[in-house]
Image (cartoon, rainbow, N blue to C red; front, side, top):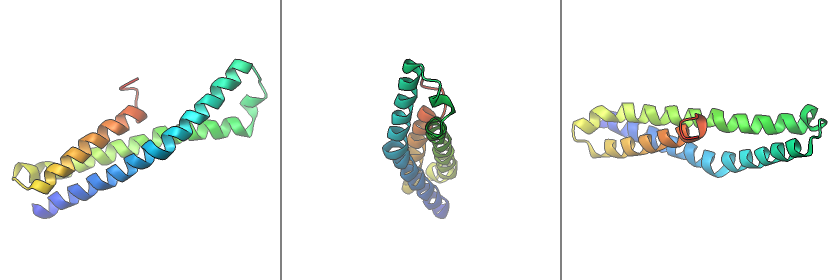
Length: 116
């Protein structure tokens, strides 16, 4: 059970690293792409909507959502791998559960419409 707890902890760390990349890199890029998109709507310039810039902005916003779903499922996997060792009083598994739950909520915040 201790090995399973360590595996759950490692998946929790992996989910945390992915969550930090999401929070520090993809979310600001998606916010900038959304600002470009909103500015183009307000200017009513139809040339933007067929341009490469529009496709790039949409790809960045989609990448944020897709990556957030990956973070959410990595957090769920960390919780599932750590729950049995945590019940059996292995302390490192509790850290895996805490990281997994936190990353599950972070992924749900950006990858779904749960908090919008």
